[in-house]
Amino acid sequence: MRRLLTGVIPLLFPLNAAFGASNNADVGTRVYPFLKNGVGARPLAMGGAFTGLADDESALYYNPAGATQVRTRALAASYVNYFGDVNSGYLAFLYPVGQTQTAGAALNYFNYGEFVGLDAVGNPTENFTPSDLAFQLTYARQFKAGFSLGLSGKIIYEKLQDYSSSALAADAGFLYNFKNGRGRVGLVLQNLGFQISRFWGAPKEDLPAAVKIGGSVHPVGLPMNVTLDIGFPTDNDPFVSGGVEYLKLNPAFLRAGYTTFGKNYKAGLESGKDNLAGFSGGFGVLVKKFHIDYAFLPYSTLGSVHRFSGAYRF
Image (cartoon, rainbow, N blue to C red; front, side, top):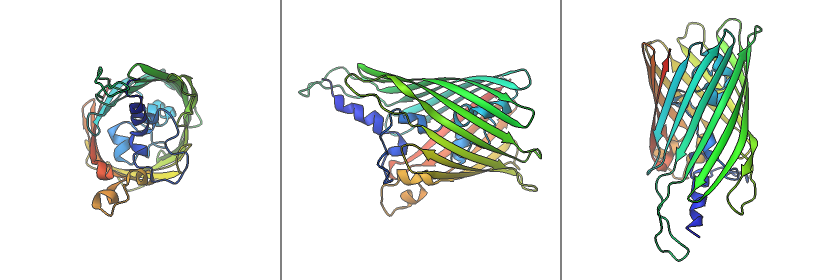
């Protein structure tokens, strides 16, 4: 069998389980962990705390109810090079339907780079590139009482050499806008689903489901958004994320964030790199109908990642 052990790498590599700092026995036990890596430079620069803000195209990932906050058609793309040949990208499209409804679609992919194929005795065979893919459709509706509901359905596909697996999943989100317009609270259930096919001979496994509660405020007299999330993943410890977005420099925006989930990136070394794990920062620029965003994400001794996103609203 051709280097079947390489199947372990795509399951364990995603950054949220790179070092397994948690004592939780469920760490690394869910399939398709790429679903947890986050998308969009703006939310990631704010520590991933976006459940209670969710007011741009990446709401399709963080809280589908937030899709109603974008009232124009929008096309967005995001790309990141991780380490080695590993890279990931995200495409999203939003289409408002009337004054209160929004439809959307998104594609999230993860590419692990080229692997050298070997047979059972170590002879070279054809090289291969493992990959993950998730396609989703979203529907969201805003109600007069100030709240929105959103639902996403996902088709997930993973390929490793000659083997593949697939799954169906759903996200459900809630978002409430305060009457004074200065804050929101949100709730999202992510990756609720099941495998419909699996690698040959492997048992069906659970998806990385999670519950997240978040809020955002625009303080009186302060030109910024402040966000806070609390996450409850099924395969790790609960975590807290927070972020700030400074708006005074419009059309430029400065962002920073921190997540306690960063402990999972630490290698246990007394170093500056370990201390930065969990922190993030970045900026955005608005040029007419174009939104361009950048995020800087330290991952301890693994190195740092630069994420870029762009959106066009029309």
